Length: 237
Image 1 (cartoon, helix red, strand yellow):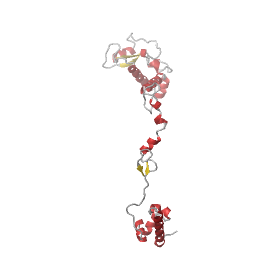
Image 2 (cartoon, rainbow, N blue to C red; image 1 turned 90 degrees about the horizontal axis):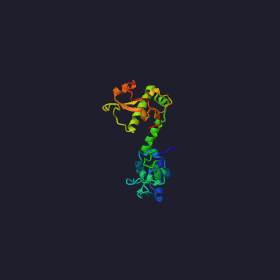
Image 3 (tube, helix red, strand yellow; image 1 turned 120 degrees about the vertical axis):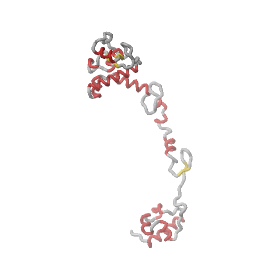
């Protein structure tokens, strides 16, 4: 249907009268209820909605174009224009009260009984112990597959050995002469002498590791120090 000014003016006037009788706001945003065409159609014919009201002899309401119905927030009892809650904060506070992830006190307690972060599975101590046990049970072959090259594998073994020496709190000084300015972590039985199915718990056993200065490390590797003979390796120390 093509609208003209002549056809729109009586239509707008009748819609205005119906709105006054029903006590409803007479605004263009309610065009469907008023039975009017859209704002674009009216603007094309009159220039704007206010110009259309002037052409129809209808007073322009410049104070309140819409009527906002205020409701009371379920959480804080404040009045607002939203549906149920005045803010996302009130919505979260109200809806998350019975949620297990927020209400379950066991989520903040580790299996060992100590406190932990709610997002973590274990506490820091248990996580460190699990990581240490996982590395101890890893074989040289498995480590080589992860590292991708034998040289990288040996470096990972040495890094694990240094961490274990720190965990055992072994003084960082040469076991042969006491020099402590620079020492190296030495394997009494070399890494290359172990079969590939040997676990790091055996390779980096406490009895197989010693701190030596660079000179005595070289002498130990060349069999010049009788003190460091291959020990009988057992369980993890």
